[in-house]
Image (cartoon, rainbow, N blue to C red):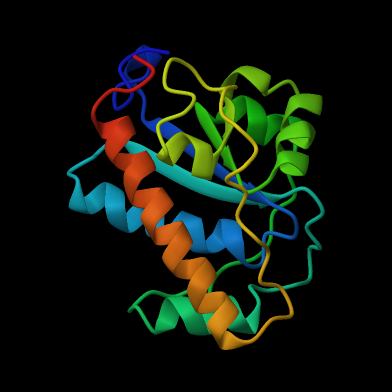
Length: 173
């Protein structure tokens, strides 16, 4: 990896968040990463999200939409995207929510750029993507109440902010 905020060829740093359905965790992480990138002055960052089992007709979950709305953000325009080899190829860093998602990214050839979001935020996997322990998976709030979605939002907020700070400092460069 080159300098994190200045990838090869002078293009933007490309970050992909992956969960199961792309209706809860990864869309929340996506909006949080965009906000954090702005706050950190990271001007050349592109952020997307995808799901290993995304259904094309499902919007972001009601719980996720309410959670981000409570914090002044919106998932109203979100539509789920399925994980694909093209998205894996597009990304410089792929942050996943759990070990099963990591395996799916590896199947598409992304082993060297994928890491658990929680592990990376905790300082693991600092030399290059592909590292990090499996003990920091982010539980899926799907079907839970608003308290579960709020806990997930707060966990994602903490992890995304830490991860983005590491990237802004040039981790992996």
